[in-house]
Length: 501
Image 1 (spheres, rainbow, N blue to C red):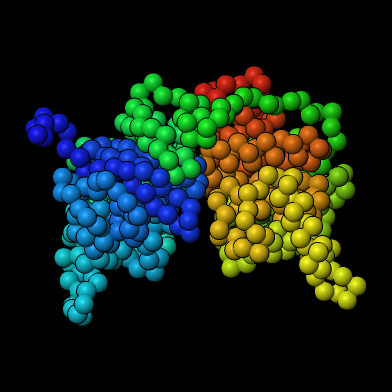
Image 2 (image 1 turned 45 degrees about the vertical axis):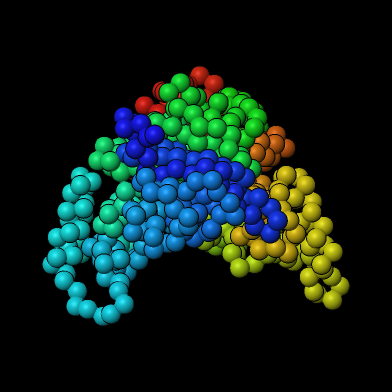
């Protein structure tokens, strides 16, 4: 008999299994979410999170399940149409919005799509869109094209569209990956409002601090199996990371004094009109210099200028104590610089090419045989060497790059640039969309490269990432370097106060 005092569930799954090509993506996993609860689904990339979401939304059918229940109704199967009708919605990391349509049109899109053409009631559409935004406590220009909005505002549009479809259970996939700290705080406030109104939220994020802040419970999945369901009260980031990876992830200050090492890059009075102004900095051999600032501070624009991708307004640079003023990114690479872009999918990788092609593309001239053709043997030696050095997990090197997890894709990007044997490596937000275990692996590689004498410029909006991996940390805001922090004598709290003030 059902306990009438028990909290109602938006979703209950028991012993759900899914197999792909003989491999179990999910192995008898239990998962439940209460009405109005914010529940985190945690695990490394490839652990089965996306598979679980796609089962709930009807994209996949499980091989077996003891129970599939939505809002108290037991179901034999779920189809995408059924999931939508019952109030299930997913906001994927790419948001799946339409950049050339207006805010109102994006919010009301599903209302506009039908089997038969019909006249659009634009006034009514805008009224309903405004009402939904009002529920979220947000005001946006309903006529503005989506591509004119900041990424944080687009997140709000995606949430509003879900609410327009009467969503009662919303899955949010890495919703804060591209947001500043202040934007993240505002988004989390919206999530709390949704929860208070009775909407169940499944929050998927690699940022463990915000997981512990926003969620009441967290379900941890590892290698397709349920590790357990835990309350976040009393949980620490270290413990949650250990549950996700199966081993303890140690975080500590590794900063060292590199002031006696030779300067690799020196920048003085560097300016690009409208982007940043009067920037001074230096990076020494074997030193990791962190640059922390909110999105829009000018961080990426500074990296582009150093790489010769934008024309300088003023200032000078010296590389290995010689004048340096690259006219293009090719010129920068030829002089020993390498740049791992913040946009791995669009700028860092060739999505339609193989793992091998992506890793080798930066040094094709070194892989030519006597006939001037690319040597398959040299190419395979290059790939196998970097796979071993960086601990990259791949199937076959000719497989598509999209078959790899986010962390392994990022390692392929690193391999591509390290193959050029650079003097300076610029890492622009290198762990966006990368899970906690892979992050630790990437930063072990970064520290190893620094120990071998490579100068590294680490750009990030996460204070802890800079604090625990850099030798010095620079603070940038509104296009200027405002200060420098020494992780050996500055606490995380002091650094956050200075940067997020």
